[in-house]
Length: 188
Image (cartoon, rainbow, N blue to C red):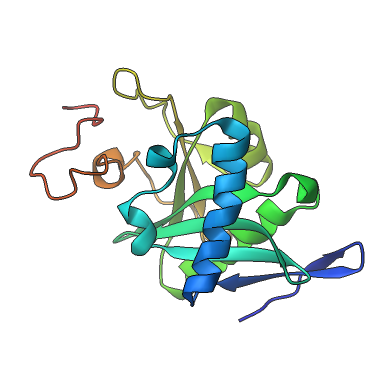
């Protein structure tokens, strides 16, 4: 399903779900360029086993992949992650277009809330888009600090009371089959 939303330089901006391996590779290429190329994120941190169970949304400018976001699904919420926009396309609201597509997907699947982890420096962007901070989370020793944020899927309904469901979503890769709480859990 392609949903045109705007144009950049006369080229339509659209989004679609990654349904084929080629689509998924385009999403991965955008993420690699943004996170590994620009932010020096190691491959082992950027790509993990969650990629194969997630929904990937890709934004295109014309036929060129310009941005992507990974969406994971939980019992009562959805979690957009790895939002990335190619540098030359930034400033054209592509991130907002991708997150709106995520919101519509979550609404169609019956989720009441979207939940994200963002770097402290990025919270202003998310707040401008209507996201609300949860209490600060303390990451495990040596881990990057993150801020948990939430947004109601249906803006006309109040946001459910929420605590950061850290124990559900942050199990480090390579230990998905371990029993108990993840190492990064605040109560571990």
